[in-house]
Amino acid sequence: MVEEGRMLIEYATMNAVAIRKILKKYDKVHCSENGKHFKSKLRAEHVELLQSPWLIELGAFYLNLEGSDGGEFSELSSHFSCDLDATSPMMALILPDTLKMEYDLTCAICLETVFNPYALSCGHRFCKSCVCSAASVYIFQGPKAAGSDSKCPICRETGVYAKAVHMLELDLLLKRRCRDYWKERNTAERMDTMKQTKEFWDLQAKYALL
Image (cartoon, rainbow, N blue to C red; front, side, top):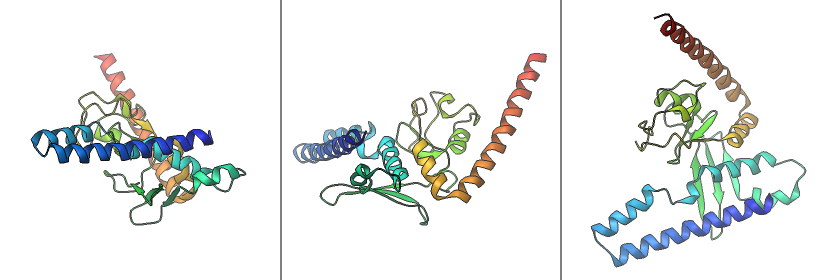
């Protein structure tokens, strides 16, 4: 598992650097509308692997292991850090050649630290309750129940809910390091879920009687 984690970081780094070089060279050679279209197309297809939610999950996984009896993880854990008390909570990934990636852990909808986070396939991260509300689905149904025409609240791209990633390691990290905040949000989400569940079954009963 340690070796797989190391390989993932190296693979993501190499691909990200390669894509940057390809875009730079293509733009230099084809300084035209065609070159701009090529660049925007690649960006739209999310080839920037360093923004992958799985990389954030990997970082949360190693940060959750800090303090456990596992010295072999220390090398990889040193790549990641997080500051959850900042005005904008962040996770950072330190890569070779002083390259640093920062990931904002603020939900763009409620403007709070993400709770029970989900990442859409476009890479944007939200609280489960927030993204379900944006997609007009119940919390207990989850983001994947959203219609194919539902749009990301940030980039407005469609078809991004079907492959939404439930970021369990990040949620565990928040639970351990922001206990009071996590408990407060958990209580609120449970109440909202119960309320929505009742509304759903009341509607089902109403339709059955018609």
